[in-house]
Image (cartoon, rainbow, N blue to C red):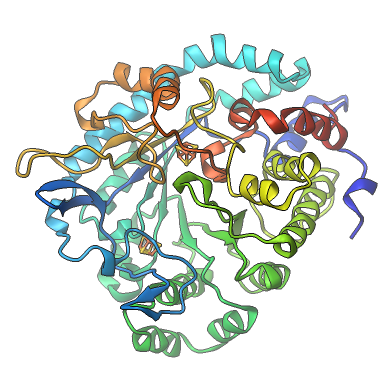
Amino acid sequence: MQQLSELKSVDLEEKSESQITEKIKKLGLVREAFAAIQIDMNPVSKKVGDVKYDATLCDHNCTTVLNGEPTGGNYTCPAAISLNKGLNPKDLAPTEKIIQGLKSSLNGILASRPEFFSTIFPLYCIENKIPSHISKIYESILQEETIEVNLFGGSPEIHPGILSIIQDIQSGGHKAHLTTTGKRMMTNPKFLESFLENPSDLLAFGADDFESVEFLKGCFSMSLDDLKDNWKKTPWYQGQRKKAYEAIYITRIAKDNKKFPPILYNLVVHPGNLNEIYEIFDYLTEHAPNVVLNPYPVQTAFFGSESEYNESHLQDLEKLIDTIIAEHIHYANGGQLRWNIVTRVHYWLMLKSVYLNFNNTKERANMIGGENLWTCYKAPGAGRCVQVASSQTKYEEGKDIPGGHLGCFWNSKTVNDNRQIWNMNENEIKNWIFDGRVELGNTAKNPCKGCGFPRMSFDSISLEIGLGDTIRDTYFKLRKEKIGF
Ligand code: SF4
Ligand code: SF4
């Protein structure tokens, strides 16, 4: 592998528009979708003292400890069962409310397009020095009215209306992505059969719990019955391991079944898998060719924590960042990708800019963990992924329905709106997308410090609008050097 500094940049000055379009798509600079929605399907009510708030219902237990004993997990998720005893699935928002709210949200996004093309996009092109031949191509790709709706929230398969919701999204000409654990598909053949009659457009699993290449080798070589048996024998409190078996089980049955949609693995790169990350990518690319990998570094700033990376992790991560940037350039210049990864060169250039701009371990680590890296509320257009999640609002039992708030799944104290999508019209939603979100973010008492979730920064346009000030100049210098503008 060549060093990043030795690599030629991508030539985007070629004569043919179709050649440049192809390179832009290969680099993943813009996507064939105008925007996205990510909805937490599973908020239910949780009593804290005498008051009820939203909490996410999940059927897994991803924690590092249980009753003081280690579970083998690498992280503790606030939705884990052991932390949320007594949550009731009966509290889930009714299917018809979700469908109604999604319709308003989809219409609100479509209604925001004229403002995007007349004001936000031209200003973005000036401020971010986008050459006119590139901006024309961006604009033509963005004419696509498709919106990706990511059904999300740990295990959205739990929601009784999940299949009707998928169908409804698709009947409106949009794409339904299902980000889940796979437990219901693995354990309930009737549910799997119904899902495959009308599958989502993408099935996404978390792959950050694949402990090692040895673990993967075991899971991909044993029989499916043995894999299920190992899952059964894994105690309920080892949620991360259970989730890993479920994802691999579904991946393996999907490989030879054409009814399955493409599969994506969200792969958080953390201190526990960093030392084997190349081998994990190589193994999955060879043994799970039906899977696209979506790697990104572990995020910590959105909940106000310090990064988990030390100096040695940061050095390994920088090598990975360099390799992935080099892979993008090689691919755009006509080569083959080494790994089946989601391409988004701007995202990796943003991470590299952190290294070029800061020498201090703590500053680097925290910024890679999201602090001042990128914010969805920096300016209109930064957030083109509309999240629907919980809120901190108390509510009345029997009267209010949990969830359905425009806002953020990970940080519910910054841009979350008290209104719920099923009670909002498209105009109210449109106003929240650009101005409402920015206003809430800028007036929040303790605003979210930022994040580097690739799904949130969406494409190079949203990423560059929300990019942290300290790395902007470095980023643009690097963009010029590596992709020519
Ligand atoms: S499956 Fe996802 S939402 Fe559920 S506990 Fe694990 S990490 Fe949390
Ligand atoms: S920057 Fe926005 S999208 Fe990212 S975690 Fe914070 S509130 Fe959520």
